[in-house]
Image (tube, rainbow, N blue to C red; front, side, top):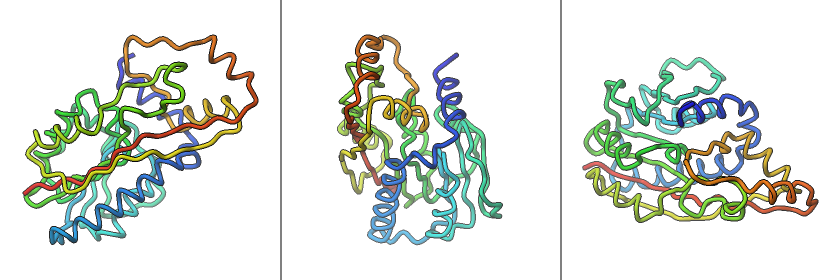
Length: 245
């Protein structure tokens, strides 16, 4: 099973994603707020077409539709969320946008992606490819996890290696985009015990390991599973608003 199949399989099993994705939903609201703020700063008033990448909850494109009144929103992911409504201006594409983005022929006024770019196998190339899908004076708004994500369990579970914020800023510059806004933040979530933490990782699909060398510390895992103490987990998140002149 290749890396993309692993991601697809685990997200397909995350049937309670909407219920458990509190951090992802919180980040989405932060990303939306900055998208709105900075679109006003650049006199961005032509959101006719939106590309929504990596969507795990159909409430996301519905919210984008309500805010921006776009004529068309294309939703694209390797595993599509269950549609909660049939909206004429929202289209869905079951597609691995990390390697097959060129299969979508249109260009867009806004590309919006919340907490999905961490699964990319070549983030530099992905951002460059997305830049090619942007109209002039268009916005790329995305959030992703950063290099110190889940630092409390990095010596116990296999934690994916992520880019730091400076790497991502370089990728944005390489794609000939201007970064209007960037934020580096930590969002914590508390669990009653380690078993509850492990269940959270599985229920949100973030238990997919895309590395190739780390081994899990089974002795420590077993010990923690027997420990009744509370456990804290930190999401290290980056928010980026980019502009194509």
